[in-house]
Length: 328
Image (tube, rainbow, N blue to C red; front, side):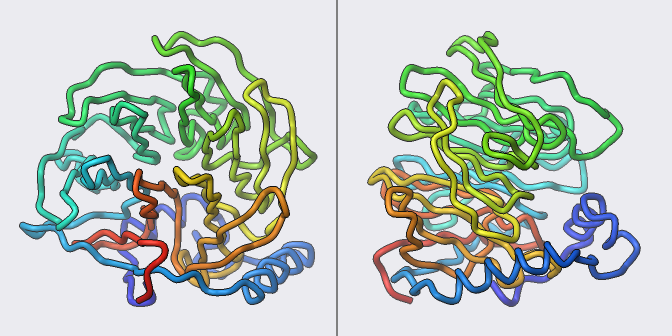
């Protein structure tokens, strides 16, 4: 990923979300933030490399993805990509097969800041908008089945002030992290009806400073608490169960069908993608089991264990997938 070039779109995204960078200056870290980032570097340096194969799947016929933020894979090996096209006449959802053949796309004009894409157990496609705080449920072919308006946006003029991600419980309930401005979670029934909410912004246990990415497994909700640089986990009633402090920024979390927990960590004070790693974590022992050098703005794991990281940066004609258990 070292040769990824930043697009104008990607830089705009960074400028919007980081005031220091908006002035063309490197972010100024406090002593506490510097120590926090060094703690992440120390942790990453001590972790062994995971045996993986990183593959860039080129899209055919060629097309350009602009700052793709999230990717997911279905049972057939098809890849669902969410990117942030500058033009509203371009579809943000793109579907390719495992070889890169373009299959279909949809969603033009639907979203302001495409942020999250997830597949539910029936392979329905859920897409979230971080500006409007809207989530949309589509069939794999792109037919809209449902939309959920999370609402209660504190500052509608802020580009990033809405919901961030969604996850699905075994009873069919839908969990949405309203992570940017509100730092809360909302549980919906399978019909999209709001059932309850919990959580708030903060730094203590059970609070969040950008609940950016979530995953559910075995009746446990994992939360990538981005600006607090930690992974927290809860039962599905919102009771705090534990956490792991990684340092830096913790962007993403995903759980494999085998129960492996992966997180996407990023140092502070460096350009997006620099020194970023996906870490395999054992929440029982608290140990870091291994690392892959790759950025993961959002992270999904396919039914066969393939990792699908969203990079968020750059213009590209391909998408990265990572196959665990293989060697480059």
